[in-house]
Image (cartoon, rainbow, N blue to C red):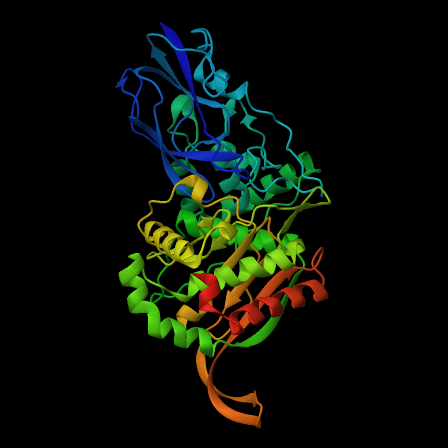
Length: 455
């Protein structure tokens, strides 16, 4: 018999932790290879984790709603025989003398991990500076501490929350119920809470001041809708990106008449010959890939004040979900695909994104992002950069307009298919010359579209 550790898998190069959503197996259950053991959620995707071995689940090391670092063991499976490998090392089962609380706390670093710019890491388990993991002998998970900080609670108020979890641990449900009850607190308790807050600020003088919850003004005709988890993550990413990057947006207008007419004349035969629809998105991606080859310094990221030039061209395509949320599947090595290959890849990723069937590796590793705001009838937009990238391109709606056309007989006014391209870029590393030149080059490739070269 041997003990096999099931570790939190690495879901992408930028993913450092994940939240346990649900355990499908409990301690004592028999498990077969590929049985789903638990569901996890990162800041990009939800995923089911299968078992790589058969055996008996003897130990669950983390509860639901807890945030676990990548590489940490989450469960122990007793197997008949297991070989030691780097990806699935053996783990020592905690001795009976240790309580579950002691086992979890022993692996947690109390001091907050800092980034190079002096701010706490956005997705670090130790991201809460104000609340220690353990207070008055009770452990607080990173999720609970994050909620407490966002809602402006003090450590004293957090200690007052009645916990329904293991050994009195505060769960997500406990703290949310406590926050809701604060809306009905008496004036005397509010005064006491303020006094407690002053004491806590004095006690933790080096901690950042917690944001205070906004005053609610709701009439009887208003509807309050709680943000779902994905919407909260998107909101956090957008604010973080605006805080990190110096956003600048440039615009160009392109005459895509030849492109539009070719697609209109060939979309039916394209579907018949290749078994997939021909949309504008793969054509736009192909133009972006060509422009990146001409201006590789747009295909970069910043890390510790160093510029990393990405040799792979991985294009993210922003996709709207039926829920109204957004996800960005990534086409890896997009420069290796023909237009037919790009069309098949775009349609496949978009279809599976809407069905929530994307794999974790299909939504990370992007080096440049394209978003098509034209599908909503918008003529242009000012998109927010998808970190850690440095640029994002938005394509607007294609509209018929009168335009000046140069001919050998002189300038003429004609009806043309026109569209705006807008690109937001990080002015810390992409200046106006590079950003503007790249955007103009994308437009040039679209205007000079030659179907004989792209198929």
